[in-house]
Length: 291
Image 1 (cartoon, rainbow, N blue to C red):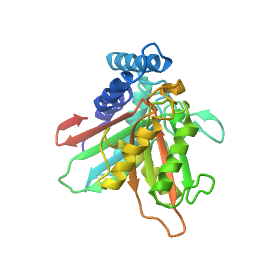
Image 2: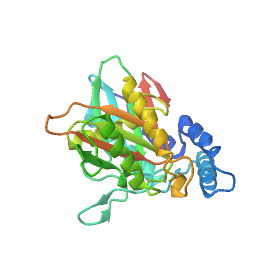
Image 3: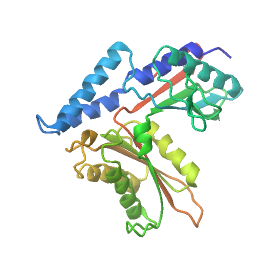
């Protein structure tokens, strides 16, 4: 089993400093929807200039480099212990190189570890075994604190919102979460929505679904239609980029359904900011590919 620490450092650098092309293209399209001279258009133009400079200078797209969330699909026979060690060592090195800001703060003693490591929970690493002849795939998302703070979870029915246990009720609570977020989530944002599960699995799945590309739709036509509708309706709220008003509050919505207990019906909303930093690294033999 080869040591991939250096390759993972490069993977972290790309994720932190180079916004994915599909996200950048959607942001560029959003600029044209905002009125010339408006605060909303100015904010979007500043965002895109920042994206360009960050890529050119290999500097973080946002000063808050976020919580590192890794999903590792490893071939049968590989050591998860060694993979975890490589990822953690790479994160320390990436922090030393200033690709990542030290973000791991002990909540009890209010002390920053200084190297982005904190117990077994920081960074967040999820492992899943695949066939022995399959490639190693590592996905990484950097989720900033501002957008994390405006995530929400609802238990349906919600009488205050008139939301029942159906997709119509899901629509009401998701739009409520967007309305409450306002500009605090660094709009324009991307919504990850999980319907079902328990409280923990529902929140986790609402983040996992955000690894999909912009515009990818759920395989269920009814759910896919709701994804499109939520994006469209969120953009009628007038919140706009950074909360300055305008036409673009959300650039995409992704929904995943889960099984649930009969007594529970959770809807979890993970809000991702415009700095939609997520990348994939694939290793097959000696070849390493970054997407």
